[in-house]
Length: 266
Image (tube, rainbow, N blue to C red):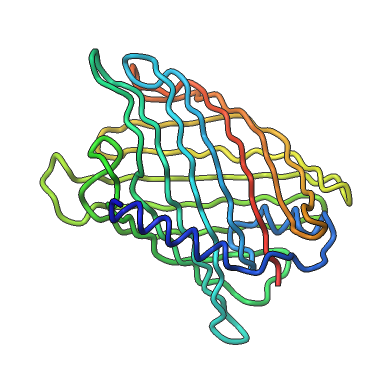
């Protein structure tokens, strides 16, 4: 088995050994925790993004992000919230005669230092590292990346809103292989009380500073908290976004997002 696939298989196997039962919390509390990127609980989101009209051949790109969140206590006052994003990519052809490429993209690992006791305002800061473990050159860069990341949000009654931001610079490489990529993910959620139902808008805005290309989506969707096997808390979301800005001739023009998130509160 390819060593990169072995790494992913072992990582997912370790997650499966975690406790299967969620602590008893209300649907509203679980929904708000799911909407907090640095909540002090283990969670395993599977976020599937389908992008349409990608590349000169106007193909469909699919990216499944496996992104476990694991908190580490640093004492009574601070937590370190680790967040790993491992993309599984189906890349469409970008030219005549080119086949669709399927495999792993580069993994992004973030570690947020966050106060253990927060009120309505929650924040975290730390580094983000990009690991070049892609299985094909079309699916990532051969250069490691490093940069800062931060998140801030507020829980105000039924509302949860805030933003996550990072910027990653390549380490080494020649001018053609270097990258300087920016990401901003504002989010706003409205929760319908104890029902566990919520509205969500969480566009992922990206910029390639070297080329000047931006992707700016607008849109949103709906989510629901429910439990399986009696106690296991699960979040689902379905949303659609239209890109008001995107690279000419490359896209994507619009996308859909489906999220399935398993939560393991303490």
